Length: 271
Image (cartoon, rainbow, N blue to C red):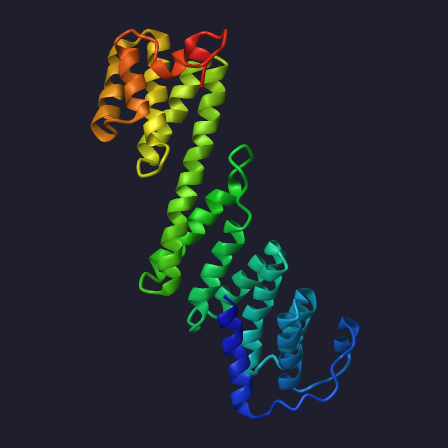
């Protein structure tokens, strides 16, 4: 994304009007000191390069305030949001991006705006033990990029991140399912594992989810359902440890992996 910012810098250089006079010494100065659009934008880019993202955002905003009808005002809206993103001020970045998209839906950089918004959510994804609201918002925003701009470079990267995001959401369902299973809330556990199988069937968690279903159904004394889960597991993931353990369960035997664990807990409480 730094190349995106660099492209704007090169545009300024090409204009041949980059004679920077006196840079403002603080954010307060820009409230009353009138400058040319090139001076303000150039100072914003300098702050961006120096990692002074708060100051960069303030100067990009000042471009729009002092020169609202210039071509640089449009670019500055996007660059201000990018500065907030770099400063981990994701809410400010998202607000700016939403405004840019609403006002400039046909702009050549609108695809990047959608992608950067998705990245704002993506960067806030937390571990599976926590609430996954940001993960869901990230998935929705990434899918929006792919749908709207399928042939862009942003779509290709978004597709990769969609797979990671879906795997993360499946991991959350697995964590909750194991929690229920550990507390003998078997129906709740089954519902979670079925979500993984039905909604996230292309993730890395499916094999374990099928085994956990086999496990839960066996504990509940529903051998027909246990056998169905084990059969699906064997068909899709033959030769895996999950299938070997599931096969032992449906045969009425304690899985070998459980036997190897030194514990006083019943086999159905070990995971």
